[in-house]
Image (cartoon, rainbow, N blue to C red; front, side, top):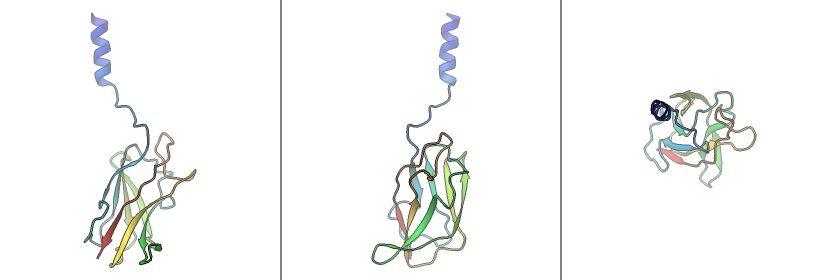
Length: 131
């Protein structure tokens, strides 16, 4: 009986298994947000522990959208990981210029932002507006 209780206690104390994919689970501001302050540092919440070596301004960013739908310019920024790598903060070097809609840029491929298990961050798209 003691062995059974020991096994049950061990199961109850086991660490939560890692999710099967590494993906963005939420963003702040959220997709479609309007009236976003220009001084805001956007954040991405992810499903795993982001790797600080691969999650950098080279793999994550913000882009201002042009009126025709293309990219007007990329925003200079720094990337900081918080909450044990589950929050990625994209801190612009300067306040975001007003009058633009911005999109999160998540680069894919072998040089993508990955988690500490080596899984590349999955596709993600969201945009917000700084009036």
